[in-house]
Length: 205
Image (cartoon, rainbow, N blue to C red):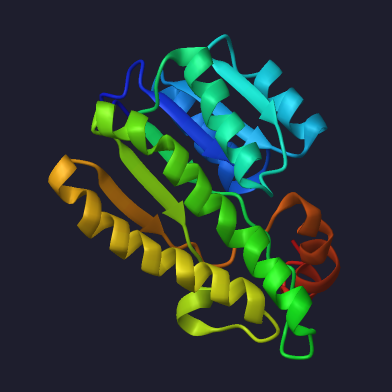
C-alpha cells in the first residue's frame, strides 16, 4: 500500500516485538526511515539486521525522562528530524486491587511516564514537520478486565492525553490519534494457544 510516506522519519517505542515490530515492518514497507527503541537487545538487533539500511535500533529502557530525551536526540542525529512518533511501549503486569499502592504507582509510572516524556522531547521536531503522533491504548481502559488496575489506569490516562493533545496541537497541524487494540497474543503466549485453546477446538488445530 502506497501511503505517500517515502523518506518520513518514524520513531517507535517498544518496537522489537509484537505490535511494535509489526509497525516497524509496515513503515519500512512504506520506505520510511525508522528508529525503534526497546530494552530487548536480542529481538531488537535481529529485527534491525533483517530490516535494511534505513532502520536504526536503540537499546534502552524508557524509565526516566533522560532516557527518553536521549532516544529522541539519537533519532534526530540519525535522520535529522521526526515526522511520526508511535508511543507503543507498555506492559500489562496484572496488578489488581490487592497490590500495595507503592507497586501500583510504580506500574503506572512505567506505562505512562515515557508517553509524556517521548512526546515532550519530540514536540519541537513534530512542530517543524507538522507530523503525527500515535499513542497505543488498550480496550482494557474501556471495558476493564479484572486484576489490571495499574495497566487500566495508565492506558486510560493515555487515552485522555490523546484527546488533550489532539485539541492542543490541531492548530499547529499535528495530528494525534490513539489506537485501541483488543486481545493480541504475543510470542510469549504461543504455548497458551496450544495447551489451552486448541484442545477445545473440534479439529484440534
